[in-house]
Length: 315
Image (spheres, helix red, strand yellow):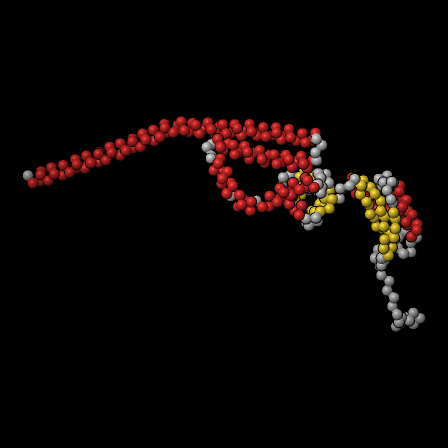
């Protein structure tokens, strides 16, 4: 009887455990169903908002692409207007670059406003942070101001050959942008120089005028016929087709050096013909002097020694 009672009590305990487990499973299942239901209701409630956000994104993209087309059209229109008014090419490039930056900034600001960004708050934030932005963009603002000064004062224009004296950068001006000026070197390299540096340092504009003076120097020996050498060089300059005949042609003694007489020659040529004419004249002068037996000496030194007895061949 005692054994049956114990088994009966044990069976009751197992039934209770099974009932408790079943209750916990039901509770978890119910919680899961409720969570899924809440998530489904959240998705269902958020679908209009997501759809609205997606529509705004699509509208923003459409506005951006349409705005980009309009900006390019405005740039093209302004560029043609400036070209028709015979504006300097540097002015055209600068205005085009400025329009591009300004119009794209306005377009992005407008799109941000369509997404609910408070433009007044943004403007106030930009105003309050103006000092910090100015300090952070000090170099860029200096370059922008330098670009404006270049266009107003015109120390050089697109197409001029300039030499920047501080870092010795030189080349032909190809483009004057809002912050930088691009130079093209003789060997077809591109040099980008900040506009602020060009306005705050000295530079040489080698092509500011239509004509350029050609300076040549030729050495002849002290034993050579000086008058004959001068006459030959003057004839070569006069006969060259690129040398301007209405300008002065001058050949003169420039220096009495240690080992040679230095002759100078000056003539005027057009800017675009400067280097070819210089190279051609130097070659012609060298060949002509060789044919006439006029020596172009190299540095030499004559040493005189006292106290040597030539007859006895000893000191």
